Image (cartoon, rainbow, N blue to C red; front, side, top):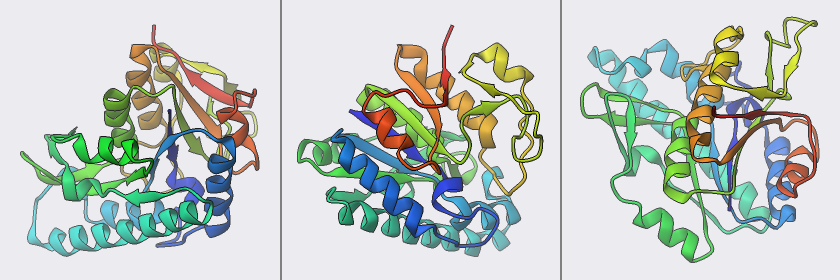
Length: 257
């Protein structure tokens, strides 16, 4: 079984509020279907979540009543995004249902807590793909917080022990600097904790969940049990399908030492 994260940078335009990339999502869903692999999909919130969340500092927890409408709006927006992703999975022939983290999970001082695994396991047993996503989740200490798609990936990896965890982004992998700004940026094919400390992770768009640094940290945490974690470019047609089928693609692999 594969665990796949469709990054917000691939399925939305993260610089524009609520801009869904239907063509990209449709293609990626077809690639998953055509690979023939059983999978669980997690997707980022992209411009449906990060922009408002950053404006109202939702990642820091409750501080004022002015944040409450934003909590409701972000939950509304990311559920609508998830419905659109699920629609494309269904169109590709994959029976899928959205599982909103904010409706069934909680956080404890920023850490995601999955108290009941049965709904997700039952869906998988019936041949239905659970689809989770970045969401606003109630937090036992902070009132609420942001559960990133990467945090959901880590929790699901611990629960399901997948063969591989694939993070689909809009870059080929981790670079020595931001490749969108620096033409001399070099791809790092393999990353460890030491490598990660040295890499610049400056972000060019709103992202309240750590960007590339957060993603690689989650990947390193996940691959501690021997599971392979890979970051690939989902904007290149065929990349995801080739990786799922075991073919070589340009990417960064996380290694725990």
